Image (cartoon, rainbow, N blue to C red; front, side, top):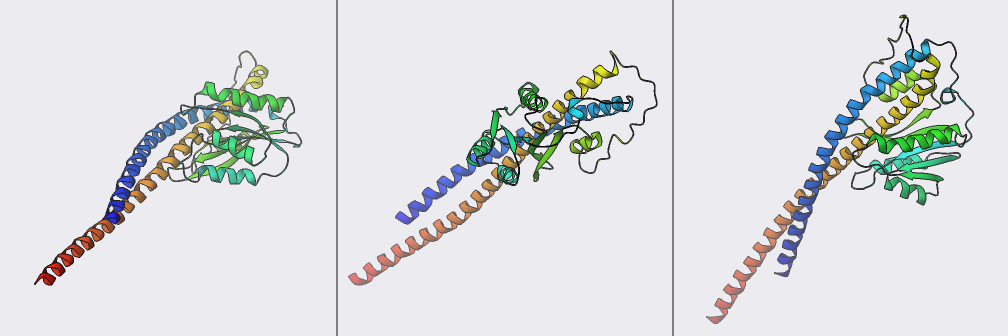
Length: 293
């Protein structure tokens, strides 16, 4: 009977675990839907800023902006966007594998507790770390971007790159490294923002209209690149958060399915053990009856 009691305890434990993973799956699914909607809504604004910047550049003969000037790369600046919590499958592990493949001198900025822990263990040059909530408010992201831009403008780093899990679909989140500074080719920037299979919305930017700039084109071109970069990085944060919730939902669904399968196997073992115990008791009773005759 002790074996039967042990199996019953295991069944109860697995069912409790399944209840937890099922609840986590539903919560992650709800958060994933909201994160996807926010990423899609923000993406249109990013594309509009890219078009505005492209048109403004096409109407000026000379561009002299520190964020749009190429320089020799001595030290890279890399922003690593990971999750604060685990239980999201291989998403973080794939990110960290990409970090391990980075060669050369680089300064790292981390967003997410898991990324900070990995960079510390891997003895990477972590110069700053930030925290961003599940809501991913622009006010939370802006200090991160401004820190990176300031480091670039001060000459502490020669590039600004973002390593994050790009949301492809619910099942796929691919780790990508996107170079955002210096800002050299807007058509490449639009490729980073658009959905796979979508046509490039900058292909039709031939605009022969006479445009009046207020206050003037120099002022606009002074401020617009930084605004676009901030919005682009913010878009990457939204994509990373959608990837995190998607990966967690898939992982919890897999855990729930595995728990259900384990409950079925344990129930079968329990029934076999109980049947064996009943058969043994019947045999003992029959043997005792026969010996008394």
